Length: 102
Image (cartoon, rainbow, N blue to C red):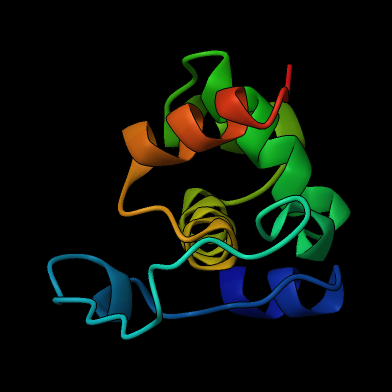
């Protein structure tokens, strides 16, 4: 039921079994991109999630603030990490702060 509600609301659903405990192997070039370092590629939701992450919010708190499922927040944040070439949460915050994000 949750999956159907997410899809009907325009969100993306991934089963938690794909995210929880499963190793995620990302292969991408770690060299910085020109310009904003990938920030221009962020969707509005990804940018909102990143700003909340920078405010020290947990995935659960971000989900509540954006009226999303926690699994959807995880998907958005992984996409942010990939786009800005961050290794993890702390790295994403560091990169965003260096780019002047507030």
